[in-house]
Image (tube, rainbow, N blue to C red; front, side, top):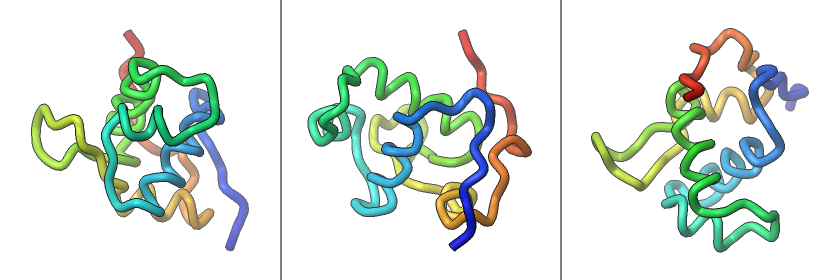
Amino acid sequence: MSERRPAEWMCCLDERILEHLQREGWATPRHIERTFSMNASEGRTQERLKMLADAGLVAPFFESSRMYELTGEGKRYLEGELDAKHQPFPYIG
């Protein structure tokens, strides 16, 4: 496995979210928030999921869904095969 190459906008929580989705297959912000021992609220987790979705690393199961899954790009990132700085820049608003 190669070393992961995160984008400048990414934070530690993003890594944990991606790893969780890789293990579980899918999750909601509430489930992720309750699973982590980090101090990340459900709202903060939802915010990070939206950013990861904008960058193409995760995707909702269907439009307006609160259930997310890892994309092919997300899997490649976790395996160290994708440099996240080359992904679309997420909307930060």
